[in-house]
Length: 215
Image (cartoon, rainbow, N blue to C red; front, side, top):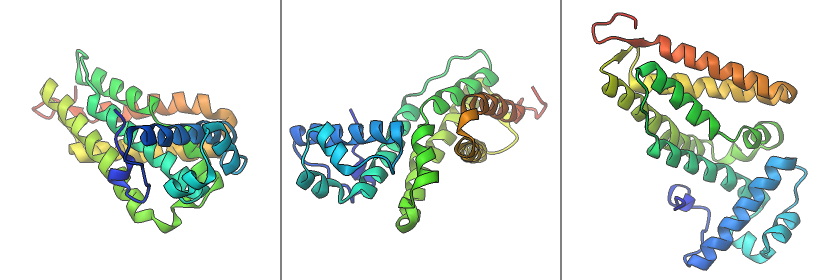
């Protein structure tokens, strides 16, 4: 079941009925597809309304305007990433294998195309930076730190840094990767693969045995 984005960002007015929630979800999913395919500036609210089968009055009541709908799409995907993190399981023979699996799983669920439009086309976060950063922290950094803790305990190893710092290394590296992919879209697939290999190499280099020796 979808997590209710309004529970973590209450300015979005998800309707209370099941039918209403289905219609709300269709609008958000339609908007996400169109924004990813063509970019924020090339998609009109009229197109979203037409393809989702909604009405302007309903969309304005739920989201306010196109800016807020785009913001809702981004934050909704953040909540989905949180679901992936919560359900993640690992079964590698070593901590290194599990860290590599963690990186692959998380990167596979990051909407690079959508976030590219956040960087390059909109100023949506100007009025709500604090709320947006708090949401990212709650739904990504903290649970990712928990995943590093689970891997550490399962394999009886230690890291050169705390679980929270390991999560920060990952998250801050991903922010840099976002910027690279935004600046040079033509090289995105190659840079993404390079980025995954590099972050796996960096994170696994921080794994230590309980005695402190490098594995």
